[in-house]
Length: 135
Image (cartoon, rainbow, N blue to C red; front, side, top):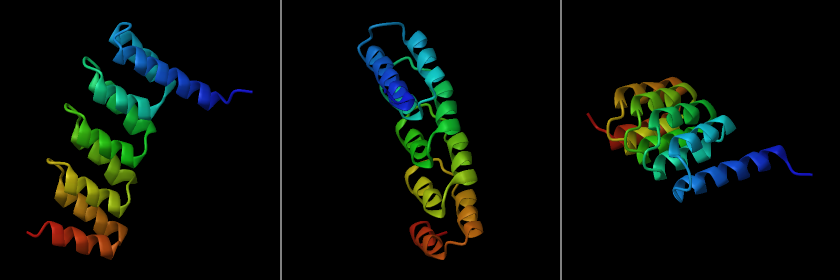
């Protein structure tokens, strides 16, 4: 018996490959991918497929993906809304997630990220943050 998640993942991979090969209309393929709710392939599609609708793919990554995937989207995707991705990190991320976002995302709101680290009470990450970003 084929696992439903495996089948969905295979479909997402096939859609991504068809887009990568330019075997069909990009927008049509993206619509099919968004219907599958596969955050990882939404990230890959945004990263690799010219003509992808970055905003729509980012929305799915924020809704369905991990904090790490949101971080990679902000770091790797030209045209990503880093403010929206940071909001996700601030809402669900760990202190370490907040530190990584501040460290690697050029337009990160370091004040808000530091405040979240304080709220989370991780003194080790706070010390690292303050060492990395002195006033």
